[in-house]
Amino acid sequence: MLINPIDKIRHEIHKCLATYIYLPHDNKTYCNIFVYEFLSKFNLENNFYSQEKKRIMLANEMYDQLVNKGYKKISLQNIDMDDNIYLASQKGKEHGHIAVIYPSHTKTFSSKWDMHVPLVANVGNEVGIMGLNWAFREMPEIFLYAKI
Image: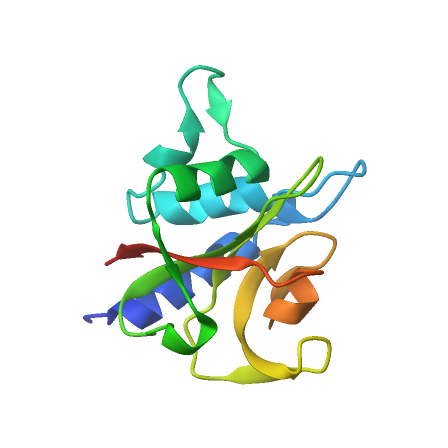
């Protein structure tokens, strides 16, 4: 059975989210580990591993990579769900946050931002598929990470 790119992305998201290790514990959340693991399913994780520190980057470091490596910033209206992987990322004072845009034409209305927003695969205090507005306190930046 051939699987189309959108279904492959969804399938890998759900497989990763089904892993209990991403549930918050010990006052820690694991968005960076989730994103790294998800991207590894497509052999796209290399930019988020620090050779210098010998570890997966933290969310703020991932944000810096997206900006410094010139990944294209995308407006919410220009997200194309065909076969692209998009990341929503926000740098924080101490800890940032990063999530995978869930490939779906379903949107949710954010009264906080007074607009329709996409769904994301979120690993944080809450783990699951949810509106972008539930995963981020403020509007994150959206980056086109890869075309599969």
